[in-house]
View 1 (cartoon, one colour):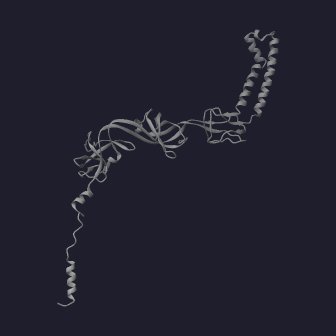
View 2: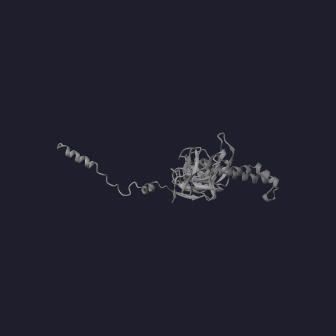
View 3: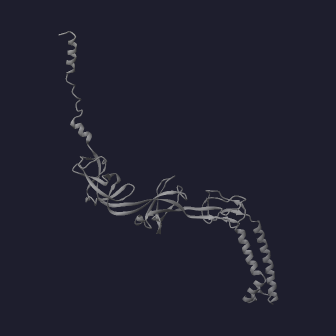
Length: 351
């Protein structure tokens, strides 16, 4: 044998050594079983109340809102409020020019004095010294012919005109949309909003009308700002369907600092349906265009078709599928989590 062949033979012998034993336990049947175990959460079906929900978008409107204008189309001489200010009932908001109305009041007072003198002279002319002895019909005629009746009316009108130079708040509220400016004329001074209560205007589809009624609870959630839930009640349903197939509904909630007039909100109308099989939304999955739940039986997942009767924000009310002729029974155990990758007959373990 040639000398250079010896090292090559040694290398070949070393390459033919048996491989080291695999690490104990690696890829063992026991380990593979552990990796493929499916743990799930379950619940037992029982008939109970279901909170049916109809979800809509709506707009808040102040329960009481008034557009205030000065009584006289004159220059505003005083503005006592600003936008966003809260005022009490009867509080002075603005004053318009008073000078000509003061003069008119003074003239009315003088005219009344003259009319009273003419009235007294009229009675004397008729032969009466004591007013108490004058017949009622004669007294009325004397008041009219002397100008006393007209003078009294003119005085009341002058007093009213002067009082109308001052604009007062008809109710307690907050000032909004203030258009009145000092030393300017304006048709509308401001809006006054009572924030103690708000109406929520929203619309439901004609097909959803059976799901709402006066007195039903309505949960109102603003889209912006304080997104807390306010509880109210439906107060009115307009008995007319629009061209778009919508019915206008009104609910009322109590006012608070987190809501304002014109705010966009989400409205959830709730009513209770008794005797339903209720499961979390995650318990229902879609397979082949059908709704499916998995029942837990003898350690295996049983594929079961269902119909979703009603839904709310977190749950479904379900029954057996009519088209697939499946049934659900009280006491069935439904898989509520870990069901996304299950198939019929998959071995599962309940947590």
